[in-house]
Every structure is written in C-alpha cells, then in structure tokens.
Image (cartoon, rainbow, N blue to C red; front, side, top):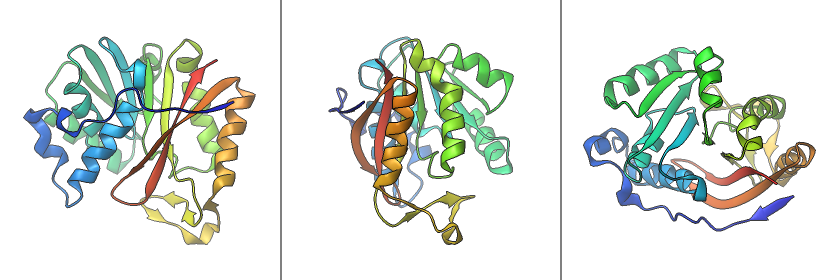
Length: 220
C-alpha cells in the first residue's frame, strides 16, 4: 500500500538552533543543507512532538538534531554512524559540538543502538540508502521495523529517477552498472507489502547534489 501525503509540519528554515547554526552552515551549499535537514525532519509529521525519541542513521554533523532543537524542548536525539574512520571523526565532532543532554551519539550495530531502538518513535535515514544495495537496505529496514510495528515511523530518502548510480564509499561507482530508476520504487513498495506496513511518499528535496524522494513507513 502506498500513500501520497502532504507534510503536516512544513519545513521552516529559521527553526535551526542559533547556538550552533554555524556548524551546519560551513559549506557553499549551506542553504540547501539546512533545507534538506528541515524537510527530512518535517516528514515525520505528527510523530514530531514533545517527548519524542529520534534516531538519525548516518547523522553526520547532526544537522537534523540541530533543527529538532529549534522545534521542540523535550526530545531525545540519537545520532548514529558506522564504526569507520569517517564515522568516528563525525561522532568526535558531534560530541564536542552538542554539549546537550538531549543529544546522544554512538555507532551502529552496538548494544547502544539496540537499546535506543527499543525507545525510538522516529527513525531517520537521510541519504543512507544511496550507499547500499537492496539486500543491505532490506536488512537495515528489518532491524528497525519494530519501531513501526509499535506505532512509530521510519523516514528515509532515496534517489528515484533515471540515471542515478549507486553511491559507495563517498563516490559514484559507475562500474556497478545499476541505476536508481522507478523500478527501485517498486522494491520499496514490495518491502512495505510483504511486511504489512504502509509506504507514504512525502515529497522531494534537493541535497547538495541530486534531488531525493522522501518516504516513510507507518503501521497499518
């Protein structure tokens, strides 16, 4: 089942927390970067409310947590990165930047991640599936699906359109010969159907690069 929905919380760029806004505006694409984080968080819609526990996979510089702190007072933001040199650098940066008890950071595939998944209401995967093949995408979704089953939501982005190539290790690998086409959307529809959950298309947003389609999974 697939629904086309309008975001109930339209992204408001001014909702970034001023105390650390400069940490997410240090690139030539900072306006796109801010709009991307705002749109991704806003796709959570009615789930974005006081007391929410949010997990952000591939959190990077935690710009989504920064945006969340400009919208809510009472929340828990959990930023996760893989245990790689890049992931370690990002988490070191985040821990130094966000001296705030509402922010927590850790690595994927750890006890910490498992504990946070038991508490989460929303899971965000912004531009995560641009780095994974479909089998790995399904594995990740299956791991976080209990959040949906107990009434939460999973929000993710993907490149749905002709000509996009799988992005691995920070670079497009044209040798794979597989492009993101509308057939890829059918894979997400198939996943939602076999897991008996609802797939909703929330809209699109430009990142620093190509346009992403933002979708979310909810309980029937």
